[in-house]
Length: 281
Image 1 (cartoon, rainbow, N blue to C red):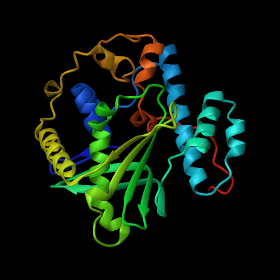
Image 2 (cartoon, helix red, strand yellow; image 1 turned 135 degrees about the horizontal axis):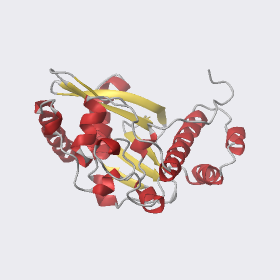
Image 3 (cartoon, rainbow, N blue to C red; image 1 turned 120 degrees about the vertical axis):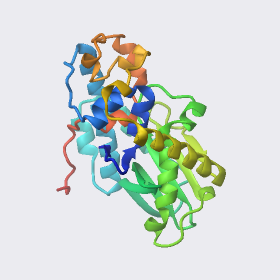
C-alpha cells in the first residue's frame, strides 16, 4: 500500500507507521524518497520472497473463494504443498461464528484523523445484520506473535480505528459503536485457535490518541535525511531492501531465523503468480 505525504497532510497505512517504528531510515527511503528495490537478492532473500508470494497467493485464493469462484483447480495447479495445506486448513477451520450480514473481501477504506488520512485494506470485513462489525485478517507467517504483542501492533490499532470511523459510510447510517467491533487474526499455522480482540470505546479513544501523536510527529519532521537515522537493531536489516544504502550486511542472519519474522504487511508488496479463477476479468 502506498503512503504519500504533502506539507499539509499525511496519508498513511499501518505499514508506514510500522516502518518508522522499526527504522526511521527505512521510512524516509521508502515513503518520502519512494525509492525502489536497490538491494540485490541473495539466496536468503529469494527464499523470503517466495514465502511472501505464497502468502499473497493464499490471500488471493480466499478472496476469489469469497466471490463464489471455483479455485480448487488453482490450488492443485500450484504444486505448493504448503499452500495446499493452508487451503485445506482454511476450508476446515475457517473463522467460525460470523454474524449473518454483508461480507466484503479485500476492501480498502480510509478514515480521517484531524487533517490526515489513515488507510486500511481489510482481508475480510463482515457487517452483521445485528449491528456488529467483524474484521478478519489472514496471518500466513510460520510463527505466531504473542497475543499481547499483537494487540499493540500498529495493524491492530489502525484496523480497529479505521473500521469504526468509516463504518457509517459502509452501513449507510449511524457508525457502529466500538463495543460492536471485533478483530480476528486467523493463523494458517494454528487455524483452530485464532486471536480474537473485542474492541471498546476506551480502546478507540486510546488508539486515537496514539495515532494522533504518531501522525503529528511524522508531519513535523524535516525532509533532510539526517533526521532519519538508521536503526541500531541489525535484526531489522535482515530482509530490508535498502540495506545497501546503510552499509549493512547482505545476509545478516540465516533464512531459517529470519523467516519467523514474516508479516502480512510485507505480503502486500509481493507479486502474485496464482492466475485469476475462471470468471475473473
